Image (cartoon, rainbow, N blue to C red):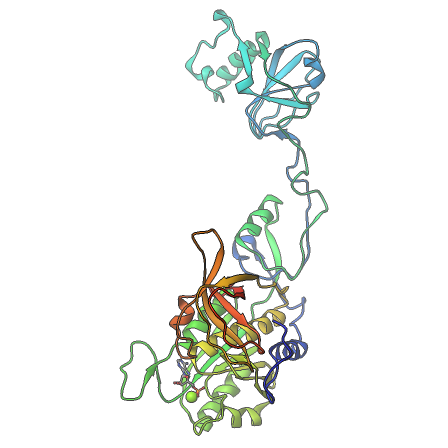
Length: 444
Ligand code: AMP
Ligand code: MG
């Protein structure tokens, strides 16, 4: 989203982001705790994870069939069946030339074998007298000792004929083919996904060191704000910013400390910010950063910390405050719901990720055709809201969600991407190519 053209007096978005990130110091890898993998979803690793073993731990079969030495089948199509290797119950002997072993998926490759043929290409040559006598022995995995003995005795007398083309090493899964002993599997700074938890389990790792959870305070300001469940009186609106932000913060796996709605009053705002600073690593407020009559936030923050009030060349979200209180970092979001959400997502979120020690993920950008005209005047970067879809020709196209006012939260809830229009861009006509940024997991 680099773009140098912006209206005078406004701070370029990239500049604002890099200034902000440069002044945030991560909490440190020593500030960590040990958790079980069942409790590690969404947590950020404070240690590199190296594999303590090969995955899979031994060569094994990828098919139900028969294992043998490939060389044995060069001069014949038939081998003598001498035993079986089941998953968890390996064959204990050595398979000699001219012999084969019944093997099941996951069964350990017996010594002396290098190849597996799937059972569909094999015929078990079985005489009437040698057929299993008991029902229990007829099953693929006989359970009782007597049944096992009967199967083994019969197998010793049986011959398997192999048809089809044979290939050395076929249907063998090799030890370490997924992950090798000692291989680095995850870097510290990595946020663990559901799949990663499975990978850790497959390595036999039960406990991991993760960065401690951040404490993030949320404050909404405004006399007009009522919480859902309350009754609106004239001039009131329902408050939504804390709800959206808190839901997004939950995805970031932080402890949210909710300070509720604070009235437009210097002392009330001051005491809320002081309390928040004592309890939190980061304080996020919404409302009161544009300088209107009832906006005390700026006066309070001038007293409590070193806060910059930026006018960023982005739409939505021009006013944005960032800086340091005594103990915490501070993000002051605009009050308008779309502006609050977009500035949180584009600026505060990368800041919190840095504080949380988490590796930054690049957001996905695509160049696609717009199906609708897009209103825009040069001077600020626009993050309009769009719906990316596939048209009847199979092409990716984007459609505007409609009115783009900074109070129209539905423009975001209908969208699945931003349409990123650079500062210098004017009106865009349907059919032109535009850049879209896909919504990531925090917005979905
Ligand atoms: P402000 O930034 O305080 O001047 O607020 C700008 C606009 O956003 C006003 O229309 C406010 O009513 C609205 N607003 C402020 N805070 C919230 C909030 N937490 N939830 C929903 N709307 C808000
Ligand atoms: Mg306000």
